[in-house]
Image (cartoon, rainbow, N blue to C red; front, side):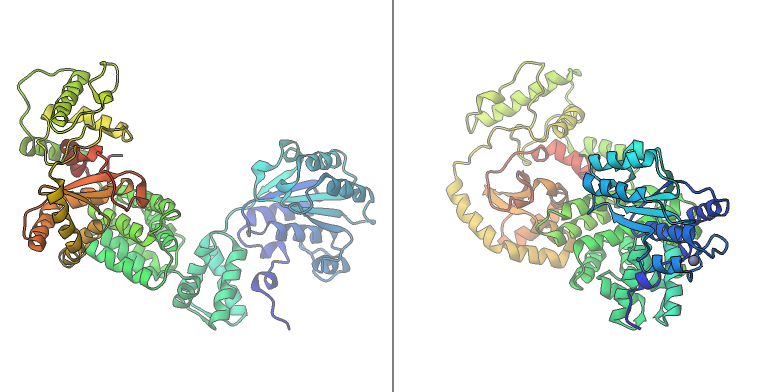
Amino acid sequence: MAYQVTARKWRPRQFDEVVGQEHITATLKNAIHSERIAQCYLFCGPRGVGKTTTARILAKALNCSDRQDAEPCESCDSCRSIARSTSMNVLEIDGASNNSVEDIRELREVVRYAATEGTYKIYIIDEVHMLSTPAFNALLKTLEEPPEHVVFIFATTEVQSVPDTILSRCQRFNFRRIPTGQIAAHLAAIARAEEIAAEEGALHLLASRADGALRDAESLLDQVASFESEVSQQTVEQVLGLVDRNLYFELVAAIRDASPEEVLDLVARAIDEGTDSEEFVHGLVELLRHVLFAKVGGGVEKLDVAEDDRSRYGELADSLTAEDVLRMMQSLLDLSADLKRSIQPRLRVEIALVHLAMMGRSVDVGQLLRRLQALEGADLRPPSPSSTPNRTERSTERQADANSRSESVSEPPPESAPQSASEPPPESAPQSASEPPPAVEDLPDPVREDLDHPEQKDPPAAIDEESGEDDASFAVVRRGWDQLVGAMREAKPSLALFLREATLIGLDGHILKLGFAADDRFAMTQVLKNRESVERICAEQYGRQLRLEGVVLEGGESAREEKEPAPSPESDPTIRSVLDTFDGELV
Ligand SMILES: [Zn+2]
């Protein structure tokens, strides 16, 4: 016998063989028993879940001369001709390719010829939502007065695109995504019948990749079985380019244990094996989805996973809060979106995961406030004894202060002068990290405003008059930079990762300006947070004390080349220290 693909060979021929849609097949069998046949059925649901298969079984059952318990007999002339697609009484139309009004008019002509005695004429229109509006109108006319013994079965993946006038004339059945466990059990039955040796975990993996579509799962089984006679978990991972799931479990544990070094190792292991970055992130999100379900859905018993994995999911679920899992998932979903347009996907993945590992567990707000208070007391100038002026006044004062500082080196552009009280204050004046921070009372409101207006244009930064000397030293810094990053990699790999993201912008006296892309603020925060380590390595490397300053570059990821430093909210020391406290998470 010629080779037949599994999905075709194992296509259900009876209602009872349809997997995962018992609520529908039972209703249809009852209807046949009681001879209450509707004139129009609408089968909706995702692809690959059995809509057209069920439509064909219904067609067979309606015309079978030897029905047994509402199931088609499979051996009468009608059953056999329908199975061979040669029946004159069953017409299958693909709505995607026969969607014009002419096609439907033609159909109407054909419908007029009644079925031969005792049989039904059945029209199966697949992807019915693809019909054009005139075609729908023509179809509607047929549905309004259908000849007796004509049955329409429509199938669609997009029921929302089917006009109400059609919907209201149909008996509607919603096909559901098939649970992974049920698909896996079905694959196991196929494997037994086909004498394919298959591990339970491997079949579960295939089933979960199919995302509820049985047909897809069967195709995947074919693909793996034709690669190697034994379907093991490892073969599945290899053929489908999946990451070893143990690695995902280890990775989530490493994030939980705040171990960025281990996170980097695991990412390297996965990606060095040739895994696609998006695929990798997708797999991790899947795992977290199960962990979340175990947490909020009432334990691991209800998880739709392989038996062997249950305890491992339980272990992760017990050691993480639901907030932790949600935060990881959210961040990974954002990462997935970023990866589609990233030119350095691997770096993106590394940064996002190290970020997660370093953010620690979900922060208690009270604890955060205490940290902020400690910061106010220790790091910043004590509050000035003066009263509590309103916000606009304070901001204007601060702006004036900033301007006066700028004037000492260069003329400020006229538009940055203090404006009327009703305008939002242009608070991101050129202040470098090395300048003394403003008074503590300025802290909360300007921070919020800066974050509200991140795009605000700022006056250009002051130009250093002794730039000639700095240029020479900067060239030295530049030459030794890669070596410095290498040295950092030995000492603190995650920090080296963030330094690698930085663009050397310039040397201003002893201040070394590092530029970071706007979407890399996290990297900048981490570098500045660890500035002491970096500055120590700088001293070893260059034999002089340098002070780091972070600058946000405009233009996102592509802004790799050196450019005019764009002053940003983060270059304000007050804001930066607050961002540091919040781990740069305020967006
Ligand atoms: Zn039959």
